[in-house]
Length: 311
Image (cartoon, rainbow, N blue to C red; front, side, top):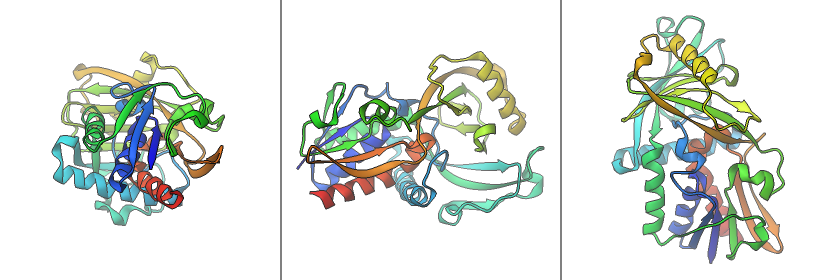
């Protein structure tokens, strides 16, 4: 069976690899490839964020955690590293359902919580260095026999192949006439300074993070729904830096070396389902919001399962 994956971001490439592993012939068609995809500028750390439905997302996330942890331990060239982080909250909440399933999860002591916060937890999670990870994914797919074609798809019924997997992200607004998909604009700053651990406030209205990588630390963030602006804005830098300094007072602004902007494909919930279009099976897999990397392998496993059921 010939499967065509539309979209070459982290979701599309992960699906391509899982389909290749299952024994299908796979072609990836996209208007953009790494380093020009939205996925290439993701921060990125494993952490369920801005995504739904929660019951399915938690399962996808834990499957992805296990695969990323394996890559961190066994495939260093993939650019995945396990790092400790701390999540801070302004009110006491129930612990996340996935907490017992990941490494080094614990509730913070009161003396570990910054001023202005009252609760939090520590966890160990994969940090995914996208400038390494995206080329690694594409190279792995190529070695397995995947072919790639650059082009703009305007109608899923015109895509070649026996079955189509749709991973177009924001492109679903036009390709699927899905107006539920909107951008959640994310601006980040790069700094040559290591905070030691990651610091996080993952509430959308106060979104803040420091994600240490081997090359830089990524500071964020913003989640501006409906904002299509890809220009780097000085006022957002000031907003980000002020929030980060509340969690990491030792930040040295003189070590800032740049930043970037990306548009997360936000939706009320991930669309992962089968649709028949002109009698052919199309598996949709888009709308992951700020958790594209976090859900990537779990969603790819479900896509491969749906493809096998439809074959």
